[in-house]
Image 1: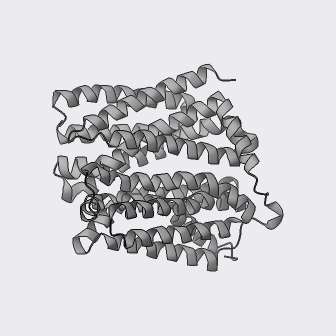
Image 2: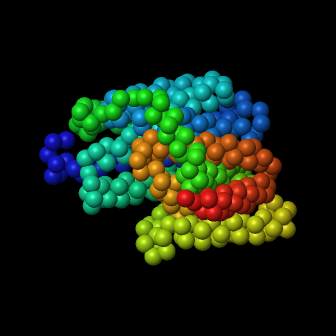
Image 3: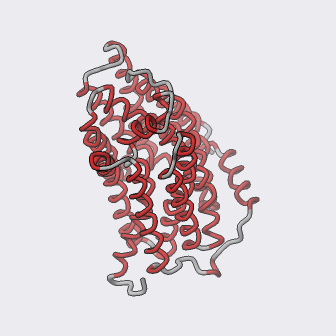
Length: 398
């Protein structure tokens, strides 16, 4: 990519593809997780959720590792290694003959997918600044928002015409295309003279600073708990909408509808945050999220765990709009005191918040009992914890 005029569009498209692989690898799977769990002999119906959460487990570990690696080894080798690991995990999933095997494959797949996700953003930062970087990232975010709307429909189409294993063939094809495109067409963006030695001591030092700083630690936990609510939804959405509400053929449309709520929030956030500021906007959004969850929990109990579909849909749409305002702002506030060690701190904060989300969201998802009560109670409980943690962080702000 040496002709920076027209080839800059190619760079944007490549970064968008690399960044979209995580969302694609999660959301395309959702219509199929019930079929996969049944065919591979999962005994507990809730075990299907592990197909999603184990991917996040690998993603969490990779987030901690690949950023520092890329600063030392370069962007292209790091992404290439990650894509190779992703392909390995995909092949294990493709040829799985029992349920534990596909979970191992999904963990490896998630570990590999974290490299293109994390390092592709570093590639943008290496060569772009100011308005140019904003242009690239706005396009990347547009793709990121489109993938959750379209991916479940693609998974549904695959299931109509073929076996679920063809979804993994699609993942493999995308990974190979991304790898070849990167290796043949993209130059290395981090010159050797700008690389930093890989030192575990630096990572441990950054972790210590995050843990000792009330704002960084408090908002890291807050990002994790609010993301945990999203993990609950991802893990149980197929059971709730496809089975409990009997919306199997329309599951992808419902998923796209809720994704619109989050996408609209991300679009609105840029304007609202300039008017209100990150803290005020986050506090307002969180309060709406918590109050709405507590009220809807009462409604769900009144309906014995099965409120009307339109009520459930309206509740989740507004909740995801609030979540869309919280995700980016919480991470940005957590990073505020970490300017001196921004790269390492980003890896620590991203990994720790993801770990909190997997543990909390995964546990609550396993409580699914054929009603929406565990999901809504999980939203309410995690929202209250988030509120308590952010209030603590602000009171102890230095």
